[in-house]
Length: 284
Image (tube, rainbow, N blue to C red; front, top):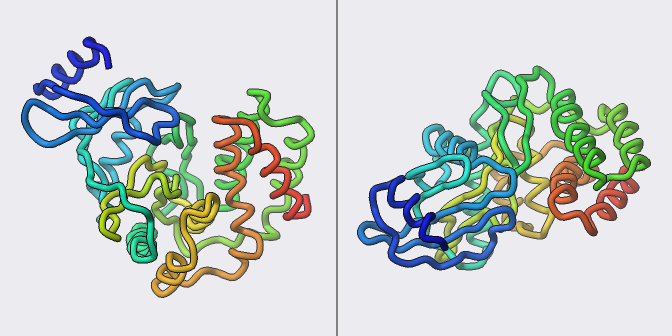
């Protein structure tokens, strides 16, 4: 932590940090817990790789103002620096926390909009998510999620031309799996265990959103990708919002191609094999 950053924090919020502790989980930025000369502990994010903390702050503020989802309060944001409340957490996601997460997420998905997309482009991690207002979910998912992220990965030499051809083939067959949801639902967008804060078996916060209005099943699919959420989560969710036919059979895999492409662009490695395996299961 440099003296210059200490000065930036002091100028931004008018209070001096006295000590820092680096936090785990900052894959695309440096994240610190800051003890201040006065007031509560704060979280400081800096050094993002290509991202924009102003957009992250916009998304957190949108959730704070329009939903009951517990999110940290933003104290300052610019492109390279984000300062927000620290939320007490650190406990594992147990069965009670899974059920609590399901209740929060189902309530989030009840917030709807006339069209898919959002009022502006957002981010998933440091990567751009285009969000043009779109009438049909199939069109939005095909063009703004699946093909957009695959073509970005191709341009960065993370995805082979052969696999890109498979995505083009898949794009022409999406109507085999996708039915239009009841309404565009507000999504967290980056729904895995690392973005859920837990204390005493209760959800204390959701962080690192990638919001837009889409099919709520996108969040549910992502929740299974790294084994973050299991049966208690889905049982609680379905007590409120039953899943449509075909989610477990195919759409979970289909929708998880998007976060797999995100992780391929960020980290490379085994994610290319995971994508190939998913396309194989879909018969592409």
